[in-house]
Image 1 (tube, rainbow, N blue to C red):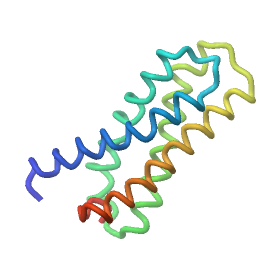
Image 2 (cartoon, rainbow, N blue to C red; image 1 turned 180 degrees about the horizontal axis):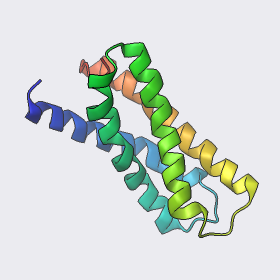
Image 3 (cartoon, helix red, strand yellow; image 1 turned 120 degrees about the horizontal axis):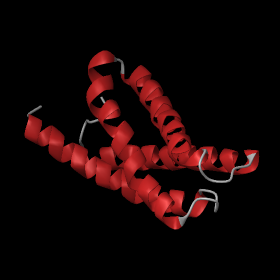
Image 4 (spheres, rainbow, N blue to C red; image 1 turned 30 degrees about the vertical axis):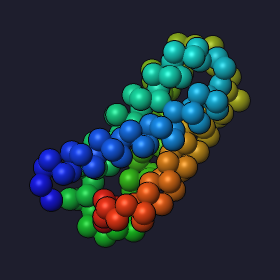
Length: 129
């Protein structure tokens, strides 16, 4: 696939992912995080994990099922870790709030994955393998 086409697909995919995950994060992350932190997280977390999912993992894992298992485990796990490093320690925390944040990030990723699969089926891009 030409680089320009891959970059276009990545840009569209990133915007689609953020448009799905951002509202989930804004609504679901614990209120101990100020709105600007939740807003920033909606863009930043995906920006950190997206290149790995798109550029690093596909050449390493050729089997589509294994790729999806690894990518869809890596993305929420990586985002939860990054979020905790950036915001989890500095702000007042409880076990309940931390669990709420982890669940919210994971649910946001699952929803965007599901919508991405539907989008892939409708548009016909074979970006998932």
